[in-house]
Structures are given as C-alpha cells and as structure tokens.
Image (cartoon, rainbow, N blue to C red; front, side, top):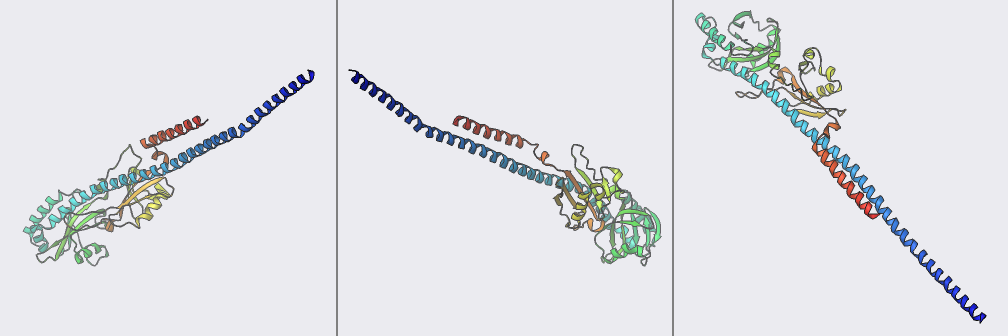
Length: 360
C-alpha cells in the first residue's frame, strides 16, 4: 500500500516537473519574437526621425536659397524701374531743350541773319526772335555765332570774336566739320567762365551747308536736379556721378562735388566703377556685391530724341546713374511664404510624431 502511494506520489511530482518544464519552454520560446518586434519599432522610429531631419534641413536650405533668389530678381526689376524712370525724366527735359534749339535753327529769319550778319535791319528782327526763343529754354540762356563774322553772342550780348585757330575753339571747328543735327557736351567756356551742358545746333543754308551754330547752355545742377528720387520708406540710395567717380547728385547734398563713389560706398563703389567700363549704351548693369550685402543697378545716362537718331549723353558727358539697396537673408524671409513653409514643416513633424506614437 505504501509502495503504491509512493509510486503515485512520484508519478505526480514527475508530472508537475514536466508541466513546469513545458511552461518554461513556452516562455523562453516567446522572448525572441517580442524582442524582434521591439527592434523593428525602434528602427521605424529612428528612420522617421532621420527622415524628418532630412526634410527639415534640406527643405530649409532650399527655401532660403529660393527666397533669396526671388528677392534678388524682384529687386532687379524694381531698381531697373527706378533708373529707367529717373532717366526718362532727364531725357524728357533735355529733349525739350533740343526741340526748341532745332526749331530756332530752322527759322528762316535767323538763317537769313546768319548768312548776312551785316544787315542791320535783319539783325534787329532776328535778335528779337532769338530773345523770344531764349525765354523758352529752362536756363533762359541762348548763344549763337555766324560763320561769316565769327562773333559770339550770349544772352543778347556780344561776348567775343571767335578765332578758329585758337585751341579753345575746338568745339566750333568740330561741329562745322561734322554738322550733326545736334551735339551735347559738358564743357567749361573760357570766355564766359561757366561750366554748362551745351546743346549745339548747326544752322544750314539752302544748300545744307553750315553757316553758324546756335543753342543753349544748361547749368549741370539744373538738369540733374530734375532727378529727385527720395523715398524715406526705403533704404535705396541713388547717385549720379562722372567717369572718375565724382558724385554730382546724391540724397546727401554734402557729398555733391566733394566726394567720390568709392569714398562713400567703399568696395561697392570700386565695383561700380569697374562695371561702368563694361557698360553698353542704354544697357543697365545689375549685380550683387562681392560681400553679398548690397544689390546694385548702374547705367549710363542717355538721351533718345524723338526728332533725330538716338545720341547717348554718356559719349559726351560720361555721366552715370546708380541705385544701391541693402541685402540680407533675414529680409528675404520676411514674407508670407515663410509662414506657410513653417506651417508645412509643423504638419510634417506632427504627422511623423503621431506615427511614432502609434508604433509604440
């Protein structure tokens, strides 16, 4: 009886050990599967986190470059428009002076006087007509000289008799040899002791041969002051300067005739002077400075007459107009597009965060 119980006891213990062993085998068998599942989740989390960083960094760099380029192109159009608008004002003013001088040279009475300056009656009548034209010019100045007697008159008064052999008479000899419809130049008149923008128009006889020259003189400040670009809401700076860089028009009047472009703008001014050597007539040059801090537009000042072929002032005056605008990346990002980009990045981030949360 005891033997039987002992056997039953041993049999039950053996069954218990077998069950425990079987249970442990199941537990150990499940551990690798759980670990593998956790590993996959971690890999997904790392992948999506890295994906977001790539999207954010790559997208941000691309966005900044794109916005900078857009601002550059917009500034190019705006500065070019400023130059064209201000130059058009100048062009219209000078064209008006040219038109008056051309009409004056076509007057039959004035032509008669030039052919025969010794006729006192014609002289008196012609002088009255010239005085009428004088009042139409901006500077109220007029000059004339007949090739017959070479007497130079300025504002109704005899000034001197021109000597073609004198070196100071080069302008007269040049026009008489090559009588273009008109010529423009800034020149210092030794006898008058005045520097002016001279509009010279040859007077022709019936055979289309020049018999003298007439025209007007405009003080440089008078025609340059037509350009009056001043917008306090912008940081744009406009300058007019000559080929040597001397400033003849600026917002700060203390710079006029006292400073040069390089002195005021430093390296930017040097770059501008280098660019004007490459300029083609009527074509503006537009560039970003080497330090990436300013956008610059520069052009030669030209006049396109409606009555005769286009003649560039720059060929005679060597005058240039430039506009500068400060540039930085931060200003490029001050747009609604930056807000939209930020919202898009936030949506992508939240979507990935939600996906990672669900994976956990």
